[in-house]
Image 1 (spheres, rainbow over the protein chains, first blue to last red):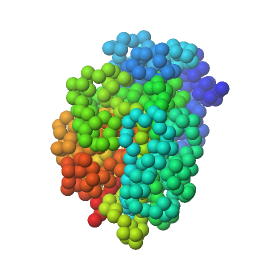
Image 2 (tube, one colour):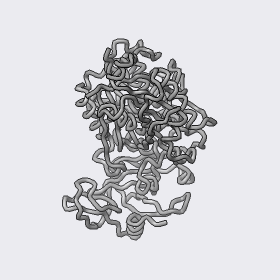
Image 3 (cartoon, rainbow over the protein chains, first blue to last red):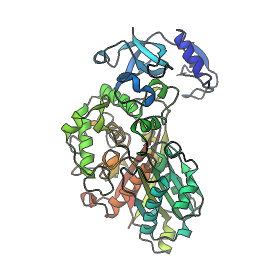
Image 4 (spheres, rainbow over the protein chains, first blue to last red):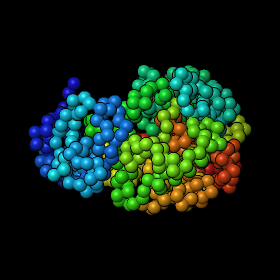
Length: 124
Length: 388
């Protein structure tokens, strides 16, 4: 089963060519979109995702859904990339060293439990 | 415009009923509400019913007519799915039905059956209230999402786990003598702090339990109440609903819930009341941090000030404005699709004087309920008042 729009975005992030959708007012969003969720503009164009973002919030998850049960404990975070924020799993950092403001880059890696692709942040 | 009266209320015991069907749970609550109201069944013109995960838990969709039948009704019935706010939005539509003259008598409520599933299955089922592509696939659970909101709050405004632990202890204390509550027992602040982590900074005792249960109310127009000599001293005088972006990553704030602010502003304007006039409130504390965010969105506290309210004793039963005298979702339990209705039931009981905690707020005349869906991408607020 395909999720057109999302799948292509995941592939692009994995290839190091991540992008977001920008409207004429410079609001950012993620595909699939036909309209800007912030202002309703219909003209959306791909823009390259900035190389690094900062952790806006994070949590170390100890109790997961079955699809992530083999990954616990894992850190999840919302990361601010300027025009857009992304949500994903943080790897390559000790939990105690993770804090709001930590600078990270984004990639796509294999999910430990299912092998599916997952958005991953690593410190830069 | 007619005023909407609460003519009768009903609840099941909240807790573990793994072997009871959803239709049986709702039938119990609905028949209790009907008996409390004293309204003939043929006078009930519509059922507005909340349910979140019945398709997963019982492999049962199209629950409206199913539960109407179980409740002995033949009227049109509609199921609303709005995650944890399902019964709140159902109530809002029922109120509109009465106000616009579509109906004089409506039944509203909700049901959720959860404990027939394993905990892991419930965790997965609850997560579908989040954005599947951008949150669930990124490892977000329901506790994990509220943990992100809690961490963002601590980072932006300050506060610590002990502040949250005081909310958990307060709500357990309130549930002790509520006969419908899942946990009719005290917990200490230390126990809450020492409970195992679920999604840091939230621990087990920051979270509401997994609960089976149902709620129901009979709402009538004041003309109907007068004509049929129905004793209905509580009116719903204000209703409001707000929305926000589905995923946390697309919100303006991680540590505020503007959907609830919008819902509250609409409900205050509708009722002509202000936050200062609210004597008592039932708010959606699916996690302790959610109570904090609710208090601030409702205008009871400025952003950053709500975190210490329980610890300072302002929202306890002895405080200026008691919050969650039922025990809240935290201790009373959270049968997802029934919760919005149960808050209205508890507030009605508190105001009309037949709740075990009514004595705590004996002079209260104006109450508020706050029901939230997901990470507050949906919120519904109602104002209730004693009218005679």
